[in-house]
Image 1: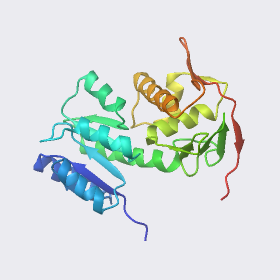
Image 2: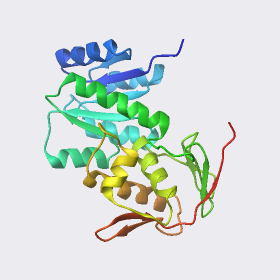
Image 3: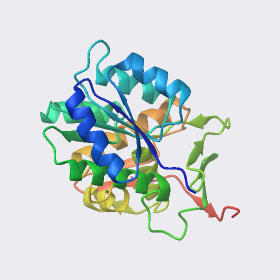
Image 4: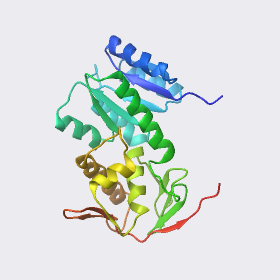
Length: 242
């Protein structure tokens, strides 16, 4: 029997935590609750977790700090669920590496739909392309779309979030083509995911920073004024072994 996806919910409000757990369990997910960062760390150290639902307003270490810390060490999918619903809070959450942001109060069905959509993007790479399981090479870098792994010229692995990997794949598979923000949303993020052009801009900024830190010889992603983005590095493609 296939293992149920295991979701860790970090939420200090017991009633909200139990509500989230009940709805996710009814959709056949395994759910563990944690009330703070200490409990979260203990669960992460002992269990395999496939996705994190993270509140921002927590006692002790807050969700922003937790997200930044986890993202520096792991590509685990993260959805921030928070009562803070200002645009700046949403932007900050995405800039530090969250894959989606859902404001409270929320419809539990929408939360479940977003969780399922993020799992689909992780599993399928968010792409409907015959090259989705191939190898992409550019400037000595290698992107394995089946293993969802990116390595630089020194063979060092670059940690990417699911949303970052999907966006990079969409651009690299269409090297030399200008893709506008709406096209990139459709190709990478889906109906229930991060779904506007501003969030695409944030993801591009994060990718550029990671390329620069990993020794890219130039910026592989070019901004096209009033157009969108273009992957400018020449890309070679090959099929991966099944």
